[in-house]
Length: 450
Image 1: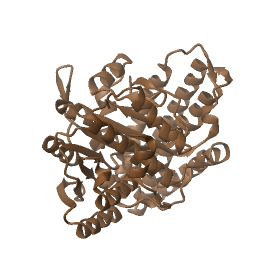
Image 2 (image 1 turned 60 degrees about the vertical axis):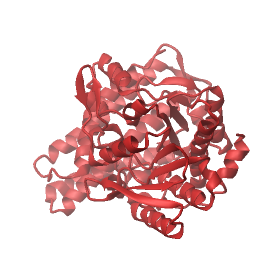
Image 3 (image 1 turned 30 degrees about the vertical axis):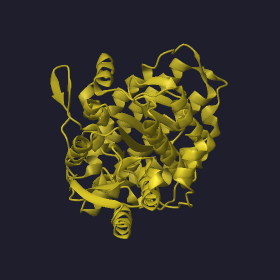
Image 4 (image 1 turned 45 degrees about the horizontal axis):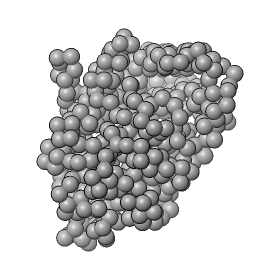
């Protein structure tokens, strides 16, 4: 199937100014099912830890089953907008299903998503998002809590949301799982479980057509193998854990548990993960020689990681005894602070340290990796202090909130002055995700490798 055919199936995407909230996406699915009762069915797979329904929306009637996971990380809502678009297309036109039965899991982590919804309508700036940001620690990420085995031990404690995904996988034995992700800043890339050069180039061609630069750096999954520029093989838990252990790190703490690829491997399921940026910058792709040796650059990144961990640790120490211990922000901040030294080690373990870094690599280290973590850590720490003060914290907590707010403002000012990024129109991002999923489904139908 040609690229234009895939684009035709996906159809035009209207301008999008805001991401759908959990309630808005549920309401959309309910209205769609009411209007197309012969085409759309909705099943509640379980309940989240906070009591939200985990909902599966089914459309199509083919023998092959395709699962699409929306918002497995609650700070990555492009996928919810993509699901909304694809559901609307498939409800209206059977051909868009390319002969498969589709199961859309609307929102994998509704509890965490609700903690991000404050920025879904904008402003969609790097610091605007950071001020409303939430991301759970590894042990609370449903997509990375699948049970698996490593070195003779059972790892991964499934959350209720994970159990819902497990039940769906076991019931459908899917040919494909598409997990929809996004980053804050940088380039676009994909993880797959296989495929061939034609598949990989077709995926990244979609990025280029949308004006999204192809990510040129190292993948964030430890030990991921590069299949093509912007396409990486998603490793199994064992490979990632072995690599982290070889670096002297606690693999289980860092990873949580197995991923959907580990659990679905028993069914021969193919995996596609779409990673797209909200903002881009032309400096990311600058391949010209910079003025720093890569090893020195990475050592500086590691030092920055350790320094930001120290800043946050000092804040937490000063408010010790005044926090309720019930805040999801506290758990996330403490986990990120504990994990930053390991991330520092990982950055310093990148190969080819003696070569000259490109200008793009220098920019990415400073304003993608380091700035991203500063904004994430700072945003959640400030939200923790604000929420705990609102619950009745005393003057000491208020003073610490004001003290750290000034530090966070400095971090935000640095990013807004030096790397605010150019926002990618949300409709383009939805188009890339939608076309990549339909491309994979079409290749399955044709008997091609994915």
